[in-house]
Image 1 (cartoon, rainbow, N blue to C red):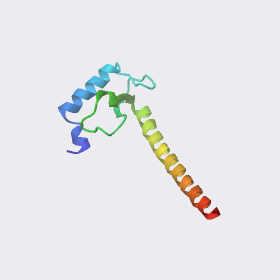
Image 2 (cartoon, rainbow, N blue to C red):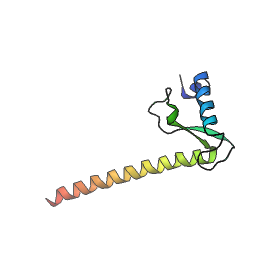
Image 3 (tube, rainbow, N blue to C red):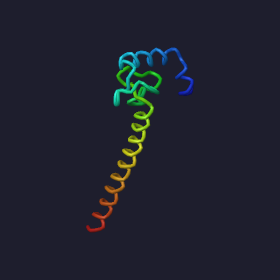
Image 4 (cartoon, one colour):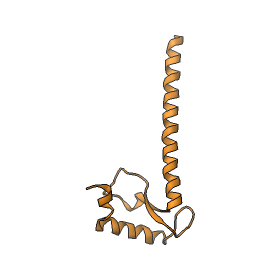
Amino acid sequence: MTYKEYLLTDEWKKKRKIILERANYRCQVCDSNKNLHVHHRTYENIYNENIDDLTLLCGKCHKQFHNMDKILELLKAFINNRLEIEALLSKKKM
């Protein structure tokens, strides 16, 4: 089953309703009640999410969260590359 198909299942609809009600139909970041999305905090349990793995965000905040994830991935890659370069340089000094 694709993720898109999963979002149409009764199981997902029940989880989505629980998250909407738990958040009082408000974005958990900016308190908006427009264009609400259920956001996965982690994809480790995809298709079998715990309710605590999910939060409610408006479309704007949801987009910002995903952009932040991309920035963090780039930063991690930069740090890893920097550490590898430093390790290589220190070996050359020996």
